[in-house]
Image 1 (cartoon, rainbow, N blue to C red):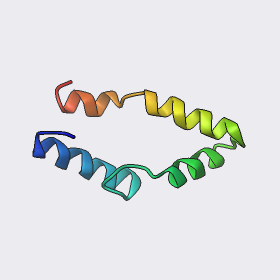
Image 2 (image 1 turned 90 degrees about the vertical axis):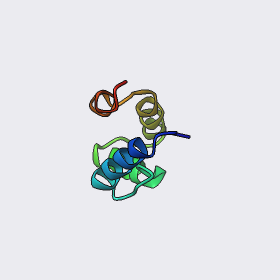
Image 3 (image 1 turned 60 degrees about the vertical axis):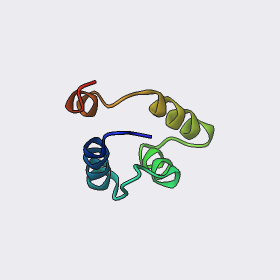
Image 4 (image 1 turned 180 degrees about the horizontal axis):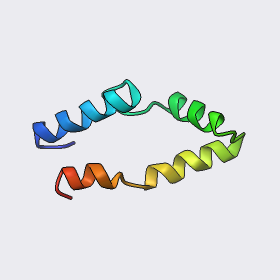
Amino acid sequence: MMIDPEEVEILQGRDVAEYGNPDGPTFDFLVQEWRKAELKGNTIYGAIIEGARRTNTGVSKKLGF
């Protein structure tokens, strides 16, 4: 939904570097990351939901938000 193709390219490059996927982390990736952090069961899902509510301030700053 982003209009500026340069911003899209910046975000996709970051996501490839960070998650190996230009579309960002997959649900399975996030579950595995939280399991490595020793979360279990529904606590994992809550952590994923909470993470989705936060912005990455470094990326926002880079894009001028």
